[in-house]
Length: 182
Image (cartoon, one colour):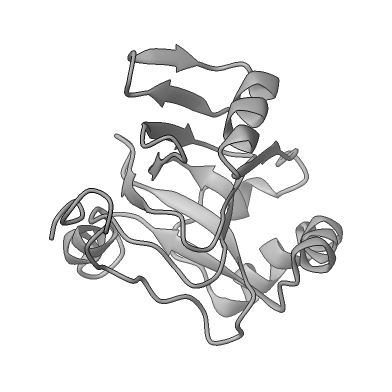
């Protein structure tokens, strides 16, 4: 279950409805899905075959199809980050720098944990720690960064509006100077 921390007052929120309402006010979407339908072998496995990734997508087919229709997403895949990921620390370096995308960033966490920090509309940083069952949509153009939580592993379903996938845009923020990591 997600927890949210507002950097302005260091307040922590863990009630799903309150998280959804506060993030909604910032233009983000938060939902929580049931992951119990996913078999144990798929949940704890961090070295997935293409067939196992397809099995995960099939398990959440109805939910993914509904999101596709709702947000104009045309593609979905499964991404896994863990200690078994080649060059994990190099990859994480790219994610931890503030960036945005030309399309929404949609992540449904199947297993593991991650930390999204988002620059809210009012300039405040919102830190959201996500875990199994958490779905977050960061709208196109919203500045954010990501890192793994202490367990250093996450398995997510990603959805894309462009079938080639997203690309991070690292640039200066006109209102505040250089972005984080610039």
